Length: 191
Image (cartoon, rainbow, N blue to C red; front, side, top):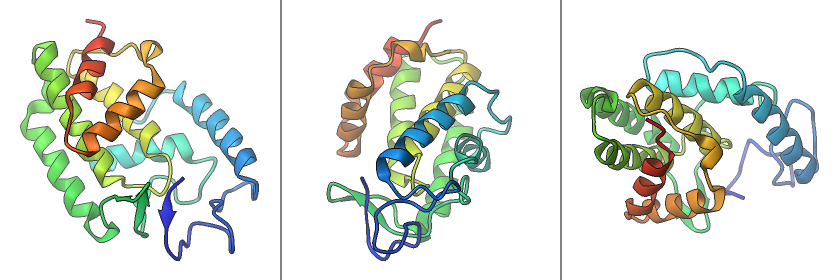
């Protein structure tokens, strides 16, 4: 659950996000969101230039059935457990900087697995700090990163992913320790 003040994304006097099915119960929304994004994740993801616009297109693809704002960067400040994410007025500039860095690193192509994992962990960590969307950042990050890994020649076996370990690694990376995240990525690489 995110902390947000004066949140235009939620129903009045509620923490439930406004959604296309008008579900007002958080459990029902969570169930619908999980089911539909899981189904959408089995479809081909949008093609693109592995840039911020492409990342936004991936979010839109996954969440288009749930939220009107799918694929659109958030306009409200949010935090999780007291840790603030990038202020919305800086999302565009920070995302541009991160994706330009990715491009200048040739999208991590041709790197040995350990170097790919380390650079990938840093990229994912920074993308998480930006937290471009009001909801659905983790799923979009993972889907986009899997595409990036495939492009870089290091496809991932996401069936081996331990969600709890990944969450803990992402939290540690938010605090500056990317070691566990790099190890998880290295362990998921199949080739």
